[in-house]
Image 1: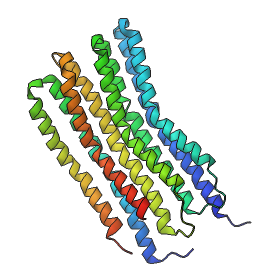
Image 2 (image 1 turned 135 degrees about the horizontal axis):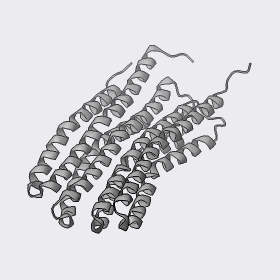
Image 3 (image 1 turned 90 degrees about the vertical axis):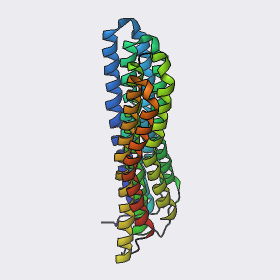
Image 4 (image 1 turned 45 degrees about the vertical axis):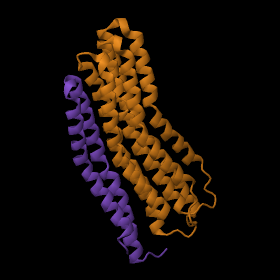
Amino acid sequence: MDPIAASEIVKTLSLLGAAIAIGFGGIGAGIGVGMAGGFAVEGMGRQQKVKSELFRTMLIGQAAASTPPTFALVVSILLLFTNVEGAPLVQGFAALGAGISIGAAALASGVGSSFPVALACQAIARQPRMRRPYMTLMLLGQAVSQTPVIFALMISFMLIFLPGKADAGMVEFVTVLSAGICMGFGAIGASIGSGFAAESAIIGVRHHREPENATGVITRTMLLGLAVAQSPCVFALVVSFILILTG
Amino acid sequence: MDISGAELIRAAALLGAGMAMGFGAIGPGIGEGFAAGKACEAIGRNPDEAGLLTRTMLVGQAVSESTGIYALVIALLLIFVVKG
């Protein structure tokens, strides 16, 4: 039996990384987008007058919530087709790290950015005249909820495209893997937390006695809270950078 | 490939750093988002107390942040201080 070549191990690990990226990355949006659709249907049943409004809100929100798995798909395809000819062994571990990073982040961001869609559909069914502010809050919350997944995408690209040292040993293998784990799992909390915050901001506007005047103060509070909630994810990004650049 | 004991320790420290910060960031992220959301809900119900509610939200988030900072400190210690 021929001994296994380094490039074959790199290919194996890249394929595993590709599977982790899209396999886990697809879970969150799958659940979340379905949940958003469910709330939209419920709203249509309650208020048939606004069904086209609800349909539009649902579709826009679902499209935005499907961005994280699209990132995961991009990374997955990159990992499937990268050239491993003569690649050093460390590139295989970097590919696995890239898959874990985007897979875990996309899972959380898919769930997190679907919460506001569900609540926006519910709120528009009850207060159709407020559809614009609800849509704005929903999109704002989704955008912030997807910041962590963009950090994770950045780390994945760095892991895939930064050239690995040919003489890398065990320490380098573990470092790139660790950078991927750090960013991927570090993104989970901030994504889901931001989703909660945006969801509750919509509830807050709905319960206000003059909803038209409530959006300003509630949007400000939401953005302040979201900015603080992103900080753990930024710590994870910093640690990943340190691991990639110094390790 | 030969692996020395020092390399093994260094590798474990770096993997530990990634795991510490990665998993350590989950809790404060969810918790702070939750606090922000509840503050928005409360302002909706009681808009006159917006200032107090925002302050309380920030204090709660700062306390929740502390576990994330512990994770960061441990991760940095593992990267820069632990030598094999």
